[in-house]
Structure formats: structure tokens, C-alpha cells
Length: 89
Image 1 (cartoon, rainbow, N blue to C red):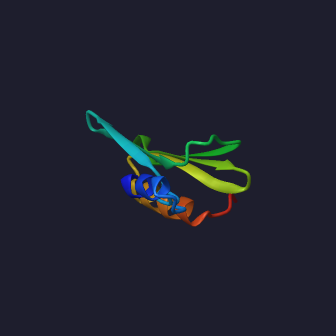
Image 2: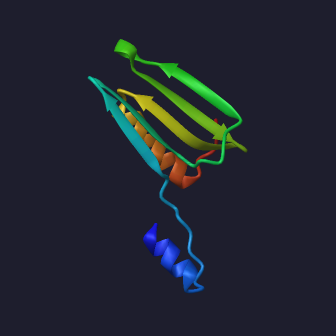
């Protein structure tokens, strides 16, 4: 973020292209989120085994967010797809 801010202040066009994310661990459970914070107009919830789940968020025909509980693979793949600008399907 600092690099983008510095370039912008210097009059050079720059954009942040890494999807922001966070995670929180409570006891033995981890919840991870990655996505752009501009909202969403559609979502898809997928239940997994042993209480795991993934929820994907779409806006304007693109995947814009993923929240995953105990599913690191879905979180990492979601980050890749969001940063690519993958279509919502």
C-alpha cells in the first residue's frame, strides 16, 4: 500500500492489485476472508465437512470476495480468482 500511495503522491498512476484479506482464529476454528470491499449483489454458500464452509460473493458479473471456514484451499484459490478478475459463474 505504501508504494501505491507514494507513487500517487508523486503524480505517477498506480493501482493496488492485490486483493486484501484477513483471518481470525477463535479456539480451533479459523475464518478467512479475501476480497474487494465495494459490496456484492450475489452470493453462493457451500457447506463442507465437519462444519467447514465457503461463501463466494459476486458483483457485476465478477467474483469479488470469498470467506472460508477451515478451508485454506478455497481461500487461496479465491484470492487468485479475485485478483484475475474471474467471472461470477
